[in-house]
Length: 185
Ligand SMILES: O=P(O)(O)OC[C@H]1O[C@H](OP(=O)(O)OP(=O)(O)O)[C@H](O)[C@@H]1O
Ligand SMILES: Nc1nc2[nH]cnc2c(=O)[nH]1
Image 1 (cartoon, rainbow, N blue to C red):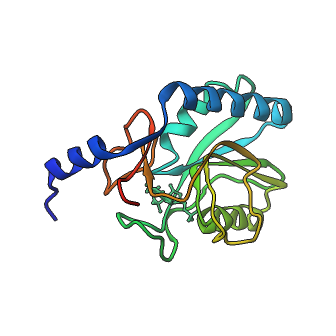
Image 2 (cartoon, helix red, strand yellow):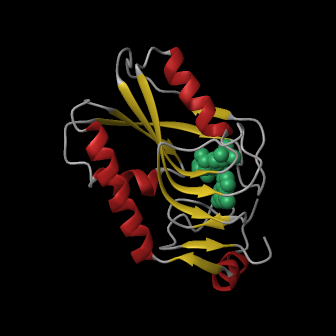
Image 3 (cartoon, protein in one colour):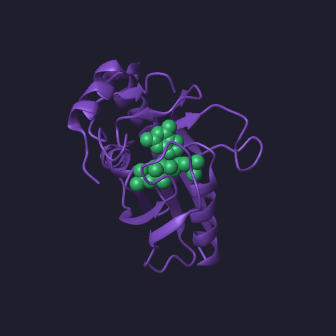
């Protein structure tokens, strides 16, 4: 499928900025502090959920100055759509996580099905404790479980489709240096 780059550029120009870079970096630093306070002696295994978790995981890790191991999983359920479907595992965790503390890091907790499935998988593999960390929690009443929350969260957003800081619009703008909401969504 060919991509209309003029459309991609226009989407970015017309989008509403919900959080700028400075606000996001401050939120990431606060997440790093909270994780450090709780986990600095636990030798955790940090899983980046690709693709969206790429930016937040990299930035968050530099705030975690204690021994840890890092790896990634790849699961997707939105592909290039604005609404989610069936979770598609592309790469499952490979490390031995028996008895380990695992932290699953992703860009967004939207409905929560992605995080729930990854957490369940890690528990089935014998992880002792599985915690979740997300940059963004989207506020609505469609969570996979009522009241579902991440253990560590940077920012809340209203119920709109967003991109930037790892989140994409049709595969683009994961590199946008703010959190932007799509015009009209
Ligand atoms: O809470 P949920 O409703 O399950 O949605 C959250 C997930 O959706 C996005 O991934 P996506 O499936 O778009 O794949 P991507 O990471 O490659 O963008 C995002 O990165 C989260 O992993
Ligand atoms: N890009 C993007 N991906 C998502 N996955 C779940 N919610 C969202 C969202 O608002 N934006």
